[in-house]
Length: 337
Image (cartoon, rainbow, N blue to C red; front, side):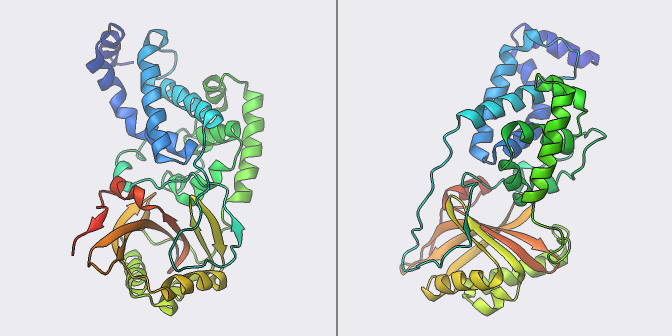
């Protein structure tokens, strides 16, 4: 521990709130991302982060410095997330409510209905963090919607172990200390978690790696989608999708897999006469759009947020969230005439 940190720690233990803020602020964003990975919900992550910082402030006298302050904060955050998962009343299923659109029979019903998008503006500085030598995933990969969704389907203890070991790279002994467990228990949970995650992640392939964020290839594909979707051009939209395209819309449980059934779904949406305007943004490291529905008055009301998962020169997944998330992305609730 350097002299500056030791001095801040001493002042914080004496009740100096500003010293505590300076101690913890460098870790705030990465802890928020950690809570989001654990919980799949931006709102829940914010609540648990606040609970974590309060617990750290109240328990600072018990921090003996045998581990780093960062690891100590991760221990508190992880256990607060586990408590939240045990106690959480997850968002209820929402019924389909799009006027004049009768959705086709879904491929299946979704399980992670509490999933929320994570604004890229909050990722600045949060992914450029020191990782342990055993980390197996790129930080950008581990914040993607597909990865976060797959995490939510793991049992809570396995989820925590996998994130701490494979995403953050902590050693088994460190994780055992953080979870008040044993190394054998951690290794066993990790083995089961890896197998469970492999079953739930989309299979490799499906069009190749996504283009680099902000690259001309990404901009061309995303721009083509926005133009085709806003025009209600079904054939043009379908031409941009992979054969195994996956469409979901939490907290509505309907999920559609494959171009044929997605074509039926979008055909009914476009056939209703609905037309929208799309405003670009980014979520979970992926291209996204605020969606605004045209009305007879000329005002365009926010109707949702689309997040696209790209594979090569195609779109592999399409996730629609409710309009309540628009302000998180700095997007207005409506556009004037």
